[in-house]
Image (spheres, rainbow, N blue to C red):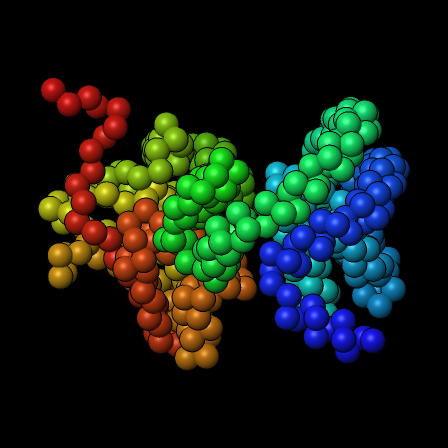
Length: 489
């Protein structure tokens, strides 16, 4: 019996199969309606459960910050050992909650907020590891307190704020969707009775006429959608065998066009997001530099060195003027060199026993464009990771040249340099975008901002020799700078 039915079904044409399907549609249709109504009821209950889950998850924001900050403090003051610390469990539970929230939201904005929270949690994990490494080394209490105050507490505050935003928009969206869903449910219940009667009347007519009319264009559309599914977004449908098929053909074409548009939009948004992230990073000025500079000014004032005080204040003013610079992200090399000169003059007073510097940038390249705050981080790296780690005085030299139709600015120091393994790690961190340490992150940030502004063929190159020094080269295009605030005549 089963074999006979199988052979008959395999030998039946598609049109005949559709006719038989229409004749048997009454029972599954009734089942479908019952299932649909029941599903809508369950969905309504699910909305309530989602709202309750979101409200409960809101406790994560406040409790996590308070508990994590305090637990980190206990670890730093060695009130708890690394083994006794509950930081790993707290981070694991927080990441678990983020994973659960991913399954509750349909909002792309809230999904992005969850991605930010995940990134913040990863940062907390990094800070925890650094604190534990410092504890194992011993005598690093000040370093750990700096991490706790300037990193951990800021990130936990960001997590708290982001979770609060997530809860607000999620609850608002869920409430709106639930009200709309209830309205649609009521309308559907009333109209489904009319639709059900109409379907019964039309079923006999459609079972004989529609299959033959629909088979050919649907087959063609199926081929097109299959090509789209395989990634071919250049294909287009051209069906005009009826109003419905024409509308479906036009909708498919519109969908393909929209997919192309969205793909391009996502690419542009990713580029803009990365630009924004790096612009925020470049705007962050190390508060310790400001504190130490002000302390040096106070010390000079107390010593009665009026000339040095005036010089230091002037350099500090010039330094911050370039750092802010009306929000511009790209400036002239002249302005950037002035910024570096102000920084080195300030540091030259603070480290007058170990630091001398030279700036040799010819006038011919001063007119070209450079991302703001590009040279200063490299000079800072040379000072803190090169010169300060040597015994005796050191020299930092900033040179500028033109080579192969490109602007090359070199930051050279005779500091401690890097061993080959360390140099390879730094280069890989910059190339593969995996900065693992603060000095690498500064180099990576500079390289990324140059690439984003001018293209991947531009950036930085680094070379170093242990106990002899380091050279970092900035490669820029020969693009003349035009001040956007000055209107052309």
